[in-house]
Image (cartoon, rainbow, N blue to C red):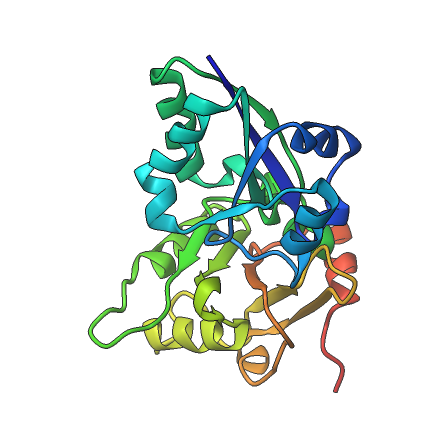
Length: 256
């Protein structure tokens, strides 16, 4: 029986690891994935140098197949999967946890910062006022699902904020940017039934990194803005803000 450690890297680079996580990683056979989020450039390479051993990077298909990790558990007493952000923000990792259990292994969990909470904290919005999280895919010919817009509409009807996660393909250097996401939301809702141009929206860019930036303003105005390098997340605030939320967002409002 071996142990599979799920280790959160956090939202920036290897410096976000706890001392305990480093202790664990030094005795594990380490794997990492970067398809659910991307670490800062060079982070895994620097971490591998610090550990004195290579970190095998797994693509989505390899991780979903579960074979590389289960094979490592069969030969090593401790194996680690390093995940950008928090490990269990993605259901794929829960599936791997269950597969390890079925194979007779144990697992341990070292959480870390996740955009699911950090975007709210950075912008000054109350985390418990968020409704269902929305994922916005890359646009493609003939593929324009309306479910993200419907989920935003449902959250707004309940006076809840919405976190909109943007698609990414780090292996190809491809990231859906907030400016593209806002344009896509308008294409899905050309009449402004869900999001009218005066409605407040916000963007949290590169949260957790030294160059983190926030933006807030009317939907119509922010569609013409640029938000710098990825990664980005869009937040659609509830129609009614608490006065402290309103004051916090004021710091990110665009100036004329």
